Image 1 (cartoon, helix red, strand yellow):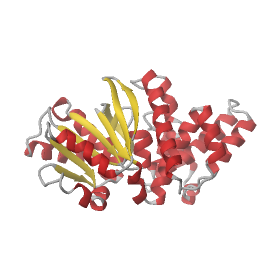
Image 2: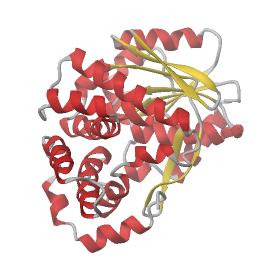
Image 3: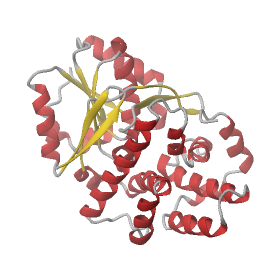
Image 4: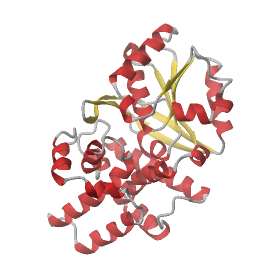
Length: 318
């Protein structure tokens, strides 16, 4: 097991990267001994891992969420509130969110606002959630055509995960997670050198390499967030490529995965930085070399620049 201490607005908490899914379950069982727990679970995770988790889940404690952008909405939040009320959840209960970024953002927003805040634990099951969305305390849902437009800052008490969850991910979901890993490479020069030397575009990584990428990405994000917990200045670096990326997601009707949009968005940001004279040609070429090793959906090239530009105007980062 690898432990990373994450700094938050409420002090520090533990990020546990465990060698097995059984180990994750064991950590949850330890919490069950003294607290009531309610689970908000990604529908895909619930289907794939039902046998491992079935002794923890029942109809009165498990809310299954369809993990698509369509369901990252207030309608889902209201349904979660109703579920928690009907089953007598209170402020001392733990809400344990198990799934990827959509489930994490939606479930965390529900936890942050139900009874003005209940206790929260993240169990991220996708690469993107492990390296990015489970750290930093951002929660949110989509509003109209805008991604993550309504939300809050709310920290979990723990993050518990295992790289074994990644063995059942689709390749496009692994690629989406790599988009956020590459973002951290562009933020941290030493990590960039490592990624440039060792990553060749393959999504089938040895476990030791995968653990390093997850742990290092989590540490880089924590370092940035610790210095700017309310996203006022330095934390803006974590938005690298995201204004472009969110616009691409929006124009695609959210058929383009978040991290894949971010890869394309970072390419756009790189070209723009060079055009503005704030990135030298040699640096641009090296950055595009690394990003170009990971192939994004070709349909992105068919989207009109006007529609992407229009969508960028409504991004909350502007």
